[in-house]
Length: 76
Image (cartoon, rainbow, N blue to C red):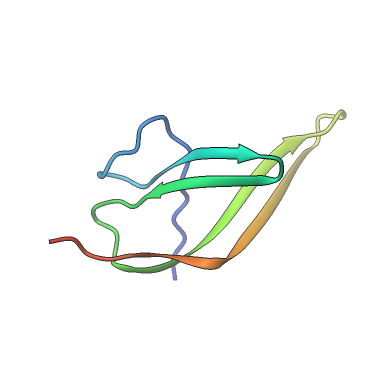
């Protein structure tokens, strides 16, 4: 299985993968994900990466893998 890195964007387009934050409340974030029209139909795992800098300027990377999958089907 390959990895598709999806970045946050202002406008979701069918021509490429995209993601927007729909709601952020405390430690919960609701995302909207759009697949590219060229994406293979199937189920995908989701992993969210967050980078932050501490007071010393060191960057830390945090990853959260959701146990649920997102499934895409073909449209005719």
